[in-house]
Every structure is written in C-alpha cells, then in structure tokens.
Amino acid sequence: MILMKMIRGYINQVWKQMSKFELNSYDVNDDGRIIISQRGDIPNNKKWYCRVSVQGSKGLKIFSTKELDQRKAERYALERYQELYFKVRDGGSLQTKPFSDVYKEWCDYIDISKINVTPLHRTSLKQRVRDTALKLFKNKPIDEITEGDLLDVMSFAKKNSPYSYLTKIKEPSSSTLRSTGFAIQDLLKYAKTKGFIKEIYRVPVPALVKNPRPDFTKDEWTKLTPF
Image (cartoon, rainbow, N blue to C red; front, top):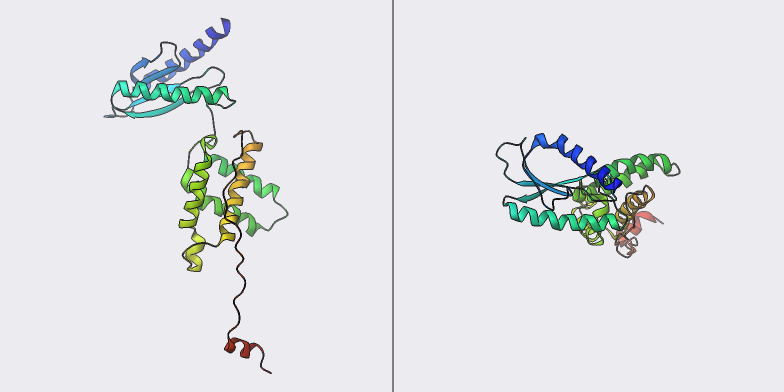
C-alpha cells in the first residue's frame, strides 16, 4: 500500500512537470499508467501523444500515437501499454538505449579492447556497421531489434554495400557480407555484456564462397615466364 502511494506520488510529480506542455490530457485507465494528451508546445499539431509507466520499471515511455482521433489514440496507447507491460515482466525496461547510442559506445569499446588488430581493421569494423545497421536502425531501441530486422539489414547490406561501388561489382562478395555480419554480431555481443539486451540473435550470413584466382591467359604466362 505504501509502495503504491509512493509510485503514484512519483507519477503525479512527473505529470505536473510535463503538464505545461500538454493539452487535453486524459488518464485512459484512471490509474496514472496511461496518459494521452496533445502537445501544447507545437502549434497546429492535433496528434495525440502518450506517456506510459509500468510497475517494476523506472521512468516513462513517451511516444506519438500518430492518431488525430482520440478513441483511436486510446486504443493504440492501450495496445502499446500491453507490449511494454509484458516486456518489463520478462525482465526488460522502459529506458532502453537507441541503436545509435550503442553504436557510439561500441566504437569506443573496440578502440580499447581490440588492441591486437590494426587501426585499419578497427576502422573497417566501424564502417561496416555504420553503412548498414546504423543506417537502417538509427534510433530504434536496441532491445526491440528482432531476428527479422537482422535479416533485413543483411539484405540491405547486399543491395547497398559501398564496397560493391568501389569494385564496380553488382553485389558484394560472400566474404564481404560475412565480415559485415560478424561486425554487427560483435556490436550485439557488446550490448548483451552491457545489459542493453537479454538475448543475442544470430546475424544471418551467407556461406563462404571461395574465389580462386583465375587461370593465366597464354599472353600473361608468356610475360611472366620469358624463357
């Protein structure tokens, strides 16, 4: 009972601090957990926003419902609350890091931890993630990245790899894609170590296709062996 009063007191305090930016606030379930409102600090913006608190997790989750109709906004807020409730119940948190922030931390981490590899190799690792996963995920919470998302990012890497532009090849080689996948996997391992994610999904990489050097032509062989 005392704990519930403390939680409600905290929520009410945050609500008061934020209310000056809100118009037409509604408590969806009359328990302070789901509040929808319109932004008072953005002129002519009639979309409904929501802030959610879940017992067992600190802080709030604030997001746009992208709805102009109040009833539709309430339904969206309730559905999102259910998702967040089960996420917290299963050990997650409302306060998760966006992929872009984890990428920055990971870049600093590999500069310190991978001292046995060349600076060029460390730069290559960063570029492979920057040009693929960072472009696709941007500020998406890292703990919301799914196995399907990783499949999408490898498909994106295959179609948009800068390495294929440099070599004038339509698609990057299997070894290039594997290197990109391993770099993304390394970032996910770092995120798991830091507690940002609970599980490391496997990044799907293609099987290694050997690319042996083509046979010499007769003219090339003559130049190499002038005897």
